[in-house]
Length: 422
Image 1 (cartoon, rainbow, N blue to C red):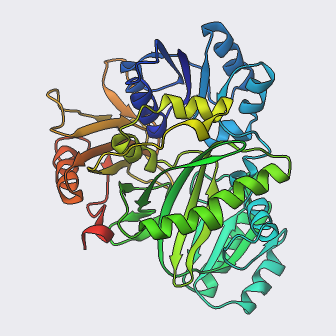
Image 2: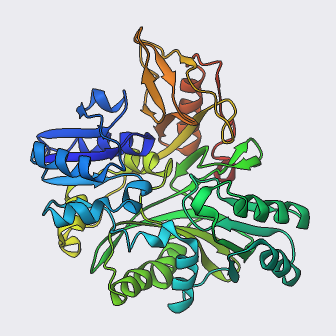
């Protein structure tokens, strides 16, 4: 098979790394890719949201399957264009991807189908959104409606912070993504990420992880796209996972199909484990980043049949995915100034002899300069991942590898996994 992977981040590098291990794959192309992905297959300089360019590339290479990584490409309608061209695509349609790309749509969908989630109201202007705060108690949860690279959610400790977050959305901080704002009740509990794959008719659970959104140790600082993650998440027991599947995952797939939006691709449910059971925080229409990285390290099964089954149908006929007994952890190395104003162009020194047993490095925001040195090109730049017999061993291996990377222009958290490790 010839497979085209769309995207250039750590999530896409992890997907390409796992896909490249499949005996079914004869050629792997990544677009636009990154220096790490270039070590696994070919890279082509076509942006993820260049729909016409990606369809043309898929035709040129004779792709048997296109795997769409980032949500921005789904919102641009890439899956729809590939479907119209008769090319198998792992990724949700633009309309179905609204489960992520519009929080207003997602919350209204949850209400229509009785999915357990926080009470909310959606607003198109600042004044009524602020007035609604009178009906709630702090902390307040303020969300920009559209895609904001993981930065459009604020958990405000007090009224002033909540009003500032509302003003930031309506003042254009997130562009069109902030044209509508969701204000919702705060849910207490531990948050976990649960993944499923759907083919439009059936769904298959596809792993879980727990991540760290805040920028700094101790869960302090601004929200980010994710500073690290680990899997499995001990707090998500088999019973809680079964409950989430029955109350959220399967009803969502059924509900989308009933509304003429058959869901093909990854359904990622952010769950809050409350005293009343799992409740929905948000849906995403793609693998989490950096959750995908630890899932790929733990997945023992060949991933390609699942990707192809979701794209073409027949997931129900596949055996359940098999997971390694080992734990996996991912530590994100970010550029100084992230998430607000990451410094770009700083040079990164990677050790020549590898990073140690059980360690895999995924590139998330790197390029090569004229002298062949790695430089930072984004906010989250490297993902240092490791497997271990225990989570503690995986953590120790990951941080030993982090300490071997010479990058004064970066920073990272030192407490990834603290919830599970006490």
